[in-house]
Length: 431
Image (tube, rainbow, N blue to C red; front, side, top):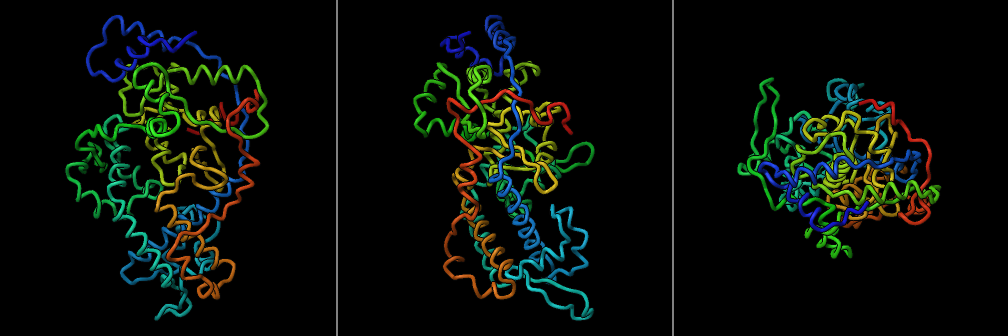
């Protein structure tokens, strides 16, 4: 069945973007796309050691940064071992917080309490303070980028509102300042406004729709890449956009799987910023729309990944199906689902090349530097402070994740990258 009919795609595109009532002919075309049935093929979940390693190391990195921020906010300028003893689960650690902080003397300086000498205390080292200063500079320099990112998150919500209790866990992933409610939101009253739900929950609301931000990462990448011609055709209604894909090795050239993915890509691409109320929730068209929403949300994160639970808290506002996790394993060429660190993390495959971020944000580069300082302390303990070259603190460092591992685990989509097999967790979603 052909899906490149010029007039049909133009009509569908107009239909999705229009706020008025549907015309009878357009309604028939709309039903035509939604009634179409695609034969799906179950795909095997394959472990990716490189991405798992990144998720593992960045779990410790995030915990160290959160502890750094907590010490900085403390009125005394330090934290006691007792005050952090219950934070292990909150920080996502697999070891006690006291043991974790002692691993990294290049960041945390341990000393006895003035009154209770047996009570360990921790303050930030000069190196940690320098890195924190650089982080604040990045937040100030790229503030407009942060504002746009937050606007786009709100624009994807059906009410253009996000409960603060759902937004706070995403601060690290979205690159928001730790105290963004006080230092960022009040500066942009024409963008954001605090509101309160009937149940008393505080939320952040988008004040005004920003049409200039209503362009997805997939649309931008096609417009600026070698696929620019394809994107111009998409804008003219001639074709649909395709998602970049890379699959694990071991997928054979099964025609049934390739036919499925070809048919999936021929479905019209629906921007996550377009109205989806008229789409049948059980249609393949809605499934592709949901894939696009998840793709866009992950694209907006600094490290192109986040925890599944964080996405779950936004499920209703993003209009995601109840068991949305199955889409991560159904489309392993787009997403990777990791079970590392006793949690479930989802990553965007195209965000990584050879074991590191393809296009790292300045904040991600600063975090790489932070991790280098952590690793130096782990390897050399107290001597590590003197072993950190000054140029490392002033310049970027090379990513330390294994590049060859990624090459062994992933291959770009090609003629021999599919295999029909069983899918992980399709019928046992925890959502």
